[in-house]
Amino acid sequence: MVSVKDRWCTLLLLAFIPLFLLISGCTENQTTGAGKISNNTLTVKGKVQKISLEEGIMVVAPPKGERVTLKFTPQIAVKGGTLKDITRFQPVQAVYTANKNENSAVSLEILPQGSCGGS
Image 1 (spheres, rainbow, N blue to C red):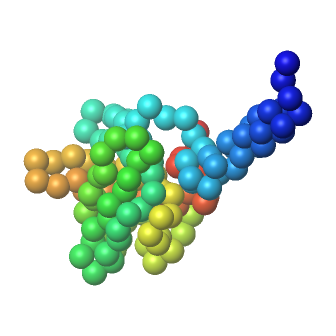
Image 2: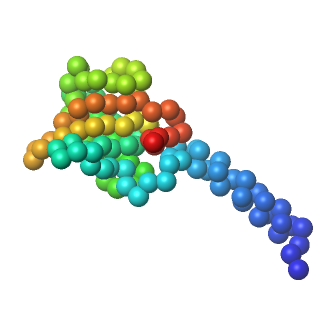
């Protein structure tokens, strides 16, 4: 027989799972944060771990997979804001080309907090 205490524990656990997912900032179910969108460009969705406007470098950490370091220019297209609006832990989606020595960002999109990319 299940006690009242066990029922409350189960109820609390079920209530906190969605809250934990929202706090983690990644509510999207993805097998990987990076994907190919055409023959020579890739996309990554994740949170910014580092950004340097002076150096033109951004590191994006997808929910699963390895971090991606991107080079960008001040003229890059940014949907949803400007380069100055991008801060550490900001969810973004980046389209980039992968070369031997570096990944060059083609475009960036600032995503809403609590998301690692929408559809």
